[in-house]
Amino acid sequence: MMAVAAVTVVAVLSFWTGSEFQKAQYDDLCLDLGGGRNPGQHPICVLEQQGAALRLGPINVTQSDIVEFERQRGADGQPQVYLELTPEIASPLAAYTEKSVGKELEIWIGGQLINSVHIAEAIQGKSLILALSRAQSEKLELLLTANTH
Image (spheres, one colour):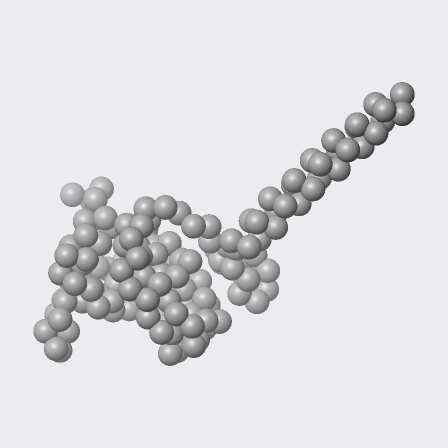
């Protein structure tokens, strides 16, 4: 009888330890932007998603997050992309960059790291411009507009 009780206790402790370990891993993937997982009902707990069209640091940007997309040329003639984001994605991006000033922001297109830029100041507002090569801007446009044509 004692052996059965000991096995049961070990099984329960093993299950509890495993669930706590998974919880800790999940929390490590989440961003803590000063107020918990979802302060103000903002979707700030962002999990890595392979193959996202655009990822700015830990923030995945999908087709539904884009209000306006325009390929342009900068004053120096280099290709760039103008993006206007929905408030639902612009807010977590602004919060993340505010907490990450002085750090690097990785820019991913289609699961491929294309650049890492220094965050000098927080991104404010809903629009931003990304300096991309012609091929990168074409790939991003294709990924973000794949289901609209």
